[in-house]
Image (cartoon, rainbow, N blue to C red; front, top):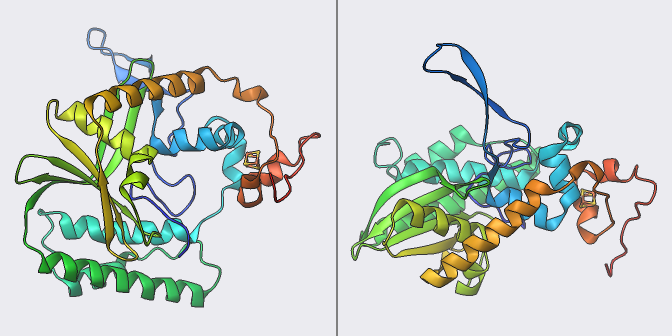
Length: 299
Ligand code: SF4
C-alpha cells in the first residue's frame, strides 16, 4: 500500500470521513425555540477540519467540488487506500477501547479485521486479498508488540471527535487515540496505515497533528500535550510537541486560512492544471473549463 491514510477520518469513498465530508457553507440547523415550542432555523457555524484545510491548500477548486458544489459528489471514486486505512483503524479502535472486551487478543483482532474488512475500491479480488493479508500482518505485529510492552500509559479516548470554537468557525478533528502517560503528559497517537517511516520533523510539519494538539490543548488547558505518528507498516513512531508560542502561532495561522476559506468566492474560482490533477477525481469536471490545460511533468 503506497498511499498513507490517517485515522481521522478515512472512509472508503473520498472525502475520507464524515468530518471531512460535512458540507458547511450553507448548513442550517433545526432547533426548538424554548419559549414558543416551535421549530426555527438557526445558522450553523462553519466547520473546518484538517482534511478540509489540506484540500483547500492543495487546490481551491478541489475544495469547491468536495465541499461547496454538489456537482462534485458524482465524480468521487472509491479508494482502496481509504478502505485499507479504515479497516485497520476500526480494529485498533476496538483493541484500545477498554469498554470493548471483544478484541483483546491478537486472534480476536485478526477475526475483527476479517469481519469489518471494507472491500470497496480495489481493482480486483487478488488486489483486495493481497491487501487483507498485508493488513493481517500489520495487526498481528501491532498487537503482539503492544502486548509485549510494559503498560506505561492510560488510554483516555479512542476515535474521539473534538471541536474548538475559533470565532468565525469551529475547528474539528478526530483523534485516533489519546493516552495519558504516567507523568501526566497527554499523548495524541495517530496511525498511518500506508507509512513505513516517520521522523519528529514529519510530525512537527503535519497539519493534522497540529490541529489535534490545538484541540486537545483546548480540552486540557495547562497540560503538556505531545503528538505521535505511528507508521503501521513497520511499527516505527515519532513524536513532536508544540511549545505554547508555537501553538499560539499555529492557531493564528489557522484563523488566517479559515477566514480565507470562508470568504473565498468558490463560484468563480478557476481550475489551473497542476501535477495533482492527474490523480484527481474532478479532472473530468475541470477539463470542461475552456482554459484548463493539464500540467506537464515538470509543473
Ligand atoms: S483537476 Fe486539478 S484543478 Fe481540478 S480540482 Fe483537481 S487538482 Fe484542482
